[in-house]
Length: 261
Image (cartoon, rainbow, N blue to C red; front, top):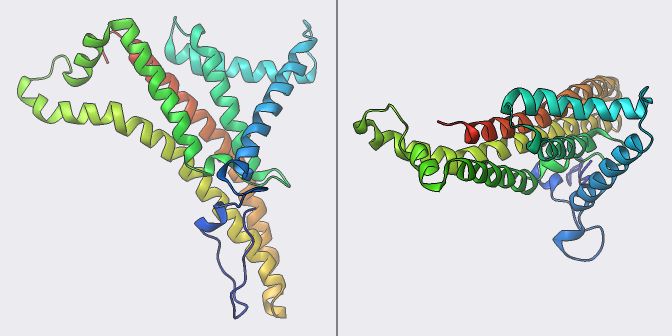
């Protein structure tokens, strides 16, 4: 669950912090052999294998594995793509489906024994995903409306008094080109970072209490109980954040496809 450095020189408990997310290379001496990098590749392998196996022997009466795969796909297709984007949703389903499953699996790594590290708690990964969404929804808008009309509607909202453009135009440019991708990435990162940090506090804190005097030993079970409860809560947050990230991606695409945005 990160770097384990719990004791100070005087034997006191050192609370976990951002340093516990800076994992050393597994081998070699470069940033491309760290645990988060391998977890990303592992997630791609696991997702690919799961859906290959789930769809290999598709039947009218689905197996449990096929049912699970179809349920996930149906959720993204119907609830995130069709209901949000509208009639032109089908061409975006593969992208949104890949985005949702990739984020979900990498989030869940944070509570899986032996792995126990949410990849999205490293901000570079959410930033990369946010950039892909940024490129997709701008590309979609430009292709549908043409570059001039698309950027004109961003900078000069229809129906707004001309004097208001002095204030609104800079805000709209900032929103579409900076705020949207930045907040999208930071929301996912902050939730995964904070959740994992809380788990570290209670689980490692409980372990430290077990090594103390008898009074502290009696308190340690409560720390573990809270840590277990937080694990279930973190599971819900991890699923929710994958949903929110994909939902916002669909909303941005829908906005780019709209005649006026």
